[in-house]
Amino acid sequence: MWSMKAGTDRIALTALVASAILGGGNGVGVRFSNRELDPLWGAGLRFGLAALVMLAVMAVFRLKLPRGRELAGAALFGALHVGAAFALVYFGLVKVHGGMGQLLVSVAPLTTLLLAAAWRQERITVAAVASTAPAIAGVTVLSWQALAGPVPVIYVLAVIAGGLCIAQAAVVARAFPPVHPVTMNAVGLSVGAAILLALSALHGDTWALPQHAETRLALVYLVLGGTATAFLLYLVVLRYWSASRTSYQAVLIPIVTVALSAWLDDEPIGAGLLIGGPLILAGVYFGAIRRPSRCPSPAGEPDLSGHSK
Image (cartoon, rainbow, N blue to C red; front, side, top):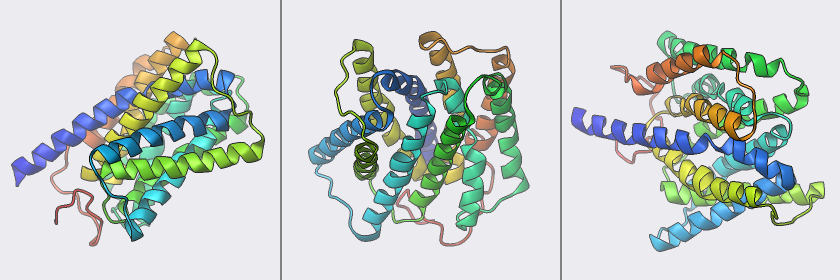
């Protein structure tokens, strides 16, 4: 039993790190996309293409579409994690740098913990809350200089609201019967893309394909690496770990994002990175990597691994 649990933890940890590395470039990619494409159209195009990729993967492996509550859960996940969250995030990143934006989303672990408790999926313990402290402290240190810059507050609030939608989506996914990660991704991306494209049409965006090479490159990365592959890996982690534990991916991604944003998008980096970075890694270790001896949760919590407890 112990070896089986250790094996699933290794799978989840590997997927967590790989997803964080790929996801770290998303904020910068969105910034480049927003320079040429209208935000909602750029988001809808990205997720629409990614949905086609995942639907093709479904066809190759002959996976069936879910039905009933499984379909409802996958659709609701897509509506929250893609449709609502990225409508807000794309708008916010018009003015907010990628590194700062990712840091604002990094408050998701504590939010997810509270939401999971509200849904009676997990219990809030002193140890669980304490494990978020170094991560949140690191986010605060890293974002202090950025928050002091001339960014209108509405754009900052939009990114934070997007992070809240992502946190709620992680909890919602565990409240429904398990769905194959590829199928979950395909349905979620399709629903989210439909929402984004509908909002784009209502907003009167110009639907045009990118003309500049850097925008095309950013779009290819966002579709294949930062969306299809990263989201699939994220769902693999969620299959084996609890919602709050999975959400610690959000405090690992900013380290990659800040570095890429400084390199490619000229985002200023303060000395706080030397303090905030280790604090974030400490939060990731104690919250997601270091496994407690017991992780009690209310009876009836869905098990996405497909195994009985």
